[in-house]
Image (cartoon, rainbow, N blue to C red; front, side, top):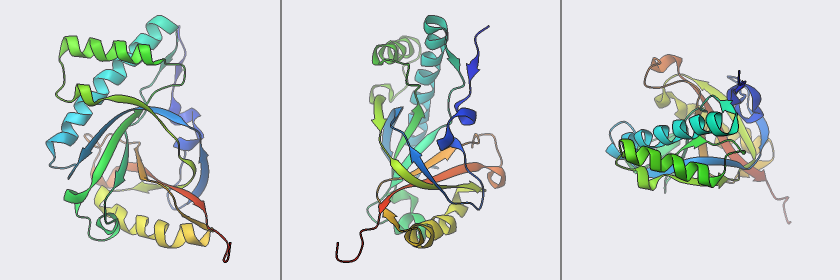
Length: 211
């Protein structure tokens, strides 16, 4: 029987507690990625991105178990989020202005050829609309500050404002990368008030005055 790895339990960067802002050094991590723009609640591109990512991720998982003898739980969906004016996240919440990249982590033992094969299997079966937009890419975040948010996505604004304007500066850091969310709950099935989401912000050390 093949042991099944659950990265939510074994990867430190997937650990977070509500109300605690933790500094974590995130290693370079490979993902299946797909980009988009607009309100995730109404944008067809968002739904199409999810419909393209998951079939590929599961084909990769099955091939890993079959060909490499290494089984794992498909990791949680993740998203990078940004906008030209970041107040559209922390105050205005103008979702129509958001840009995003949806991601599913790929274990480090998976090579690009296996991913290419998975894409072709999906293409032969049902060909999602945005299949050709799926790519394998390494994300380098390094030092980050993260916390666990429990509740609706629309209630994140106060937490993000506190993180950006108080927690990070008070710890001697400044923002240095793209806002990152990790969806520990399946938002298609879990009630909004019970959704668990890791909120992560890459940072860098604030330069000393006169440096």
